[in-house]
Image 1 (tube, rainbow, N blue to C red):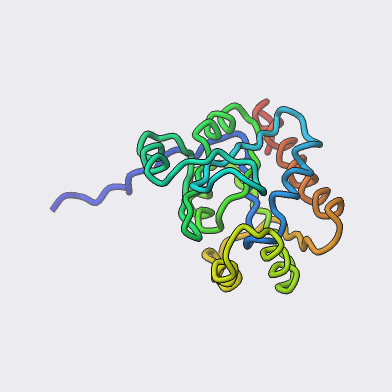
Image 2: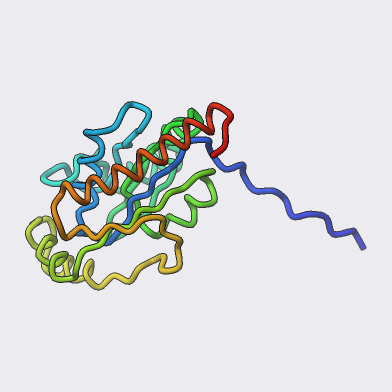
Length: 204
């Protein structure tokens, strides 16, 4: 019988930069908070532009692709992570990995369903969960006028795909944009400062 050796090691996590994953159900205002923070950070913080299989229009500024082109891009390694939700495909560009290796902080709106994958592939992951009361969220989803009433209902009733995932910061975004945006900004700046210390060889 052959001796049982150690299990093969997985891929080396990517760092020393930090991935700040902003998560939360549709309609809680994640993109508005991210836009607030983006305007107040330096170029050591990167906010990658997502690719989505949704046409351009009101709402998030993204790179639109049809489903076939998205699948081809995914096969070609164009995305660091990608996922499917609510009938759409979403991707974060592969350049994100190079930013993390360069010690930068990357901030992105991602699905809760990819948090386990991000925790495996990123040396440093900060999870910020944004929420609002159900009534506020329903009103915001309807006001977007981006989906049918049936699609809005499906979003409202979607279960949390990662209920046991560790969360570093909770933001209840039912107040002013300034209050929620500043809470996110403080988390980003803490992660960025820690990443630059680590990149210089100091303690994390």
